[in-house]
Length: 134
Image (cartoon, rainbow, N blue to C red; front, side, top):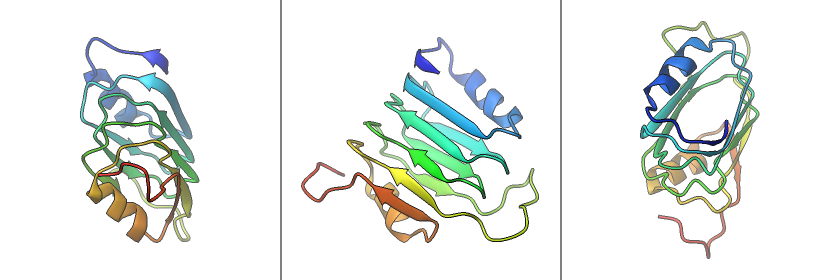
């Protein structure tokens, strides 16, 4: 979804809830009229939310995730939840993958920064000490 601003964002939750085989989600300038997006798929490997306007929080169940892009997401003042289990999925065998999170030019909360620094699955890029992070 590029340059998309739906009148009602409720359908996005329905779409993501039914996309149980989702492998890739990509957006640019997607105006999210809901404060949180929830991703859940055993097959999800790539999420790009570049300039996801109005998005505050993310919840992700994706044991095979390789890359999460939050570049230029200016409203990320909520939380980032990386779920290890999900009621609708049986986790595939083996350990969950490690993944990279790009937060270049994003405004992130201390809660999200804490998750980035302390979740053993995450390597993050784009954070510089002289940038304005909250």
